[in-house]
Amino acid sequence: MKKAPAFLLFLITALLSSCETTHHRTVAAPVRRPVPAASNTATRTLPANQTEIEYQTLSKTYKSETAAVLTAILNGSEDQEKTSVTVENKSRCNMVLTISGNNYFKKVPIGAGKIGAVMVPKNQNYNLSGMVCSSVYQRTKFVSGPHRTTVSD
Image (tube, rainbow, N blue to C red; front, side, top):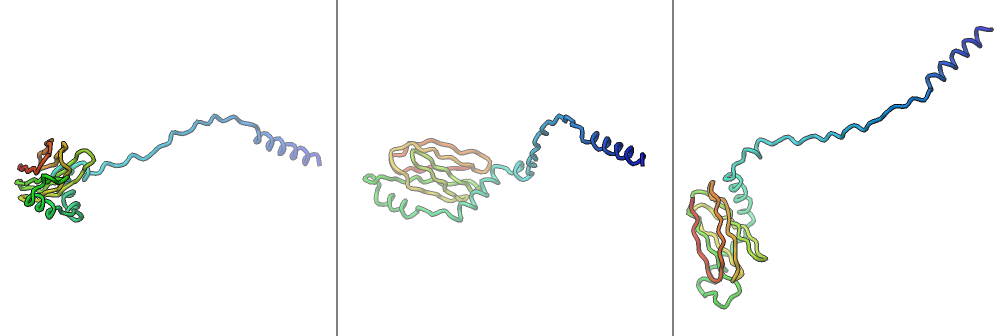
């Protein structure tokens, strides 16, 4: 019977020694966030291709102001608050013309060989910009009456 208490004492000692307090130094592991993989299509899309995609998308929803522009041109717009800006695209590429001014912003899709026109408030400076094929078109114009310009590549 003396062997049982010795065995029991050994078991208790082993159990208590395994429950010893251990101090573990914990360091927060750095948070690893996956780096987004670069898309081959995004890095290789040329500005002319981006312009064509934007042109196709915008053409589906764009509401032309041709009637208002023609009315203003034919009837005169001296006494009106707005006047027309007409842009002829003589290039072989579709373009999206951005017209921006004081409290005014509009994108106009203009097909190759076509004319685009909008009505804008008079007596303001406007930035006209866009991509024509692989060239950048950018002009600043003070518009006080009907304005017409031509774009080519």
